[in-house]
Length: 106
Image (tube, rainbow, N blue to C red):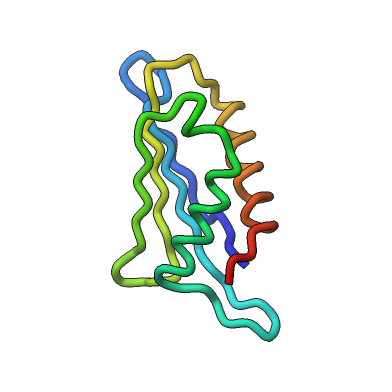
């Protein structure tokens, strides 16, 4: 099971959203170990690409495995100049979690 544990929204001086950071953590499920390392990154990437944030308004995607805790992935989406609203980010986060719940690569 992978859960979103933190979301950080970056804005510029004009209150336009410039980036969205999401921190995701893998937890043990009954009878299964927590995902870590590359299987975790692959699963998060597969779930992310079920969303349309990058193709709609994204400029760059950065997926980084936490070097100290291999059960945490940091996902950062840098955005183009756009009028993306906080409500849109909320919908993205909700859809990403649903996508994570339905993605089982390993």
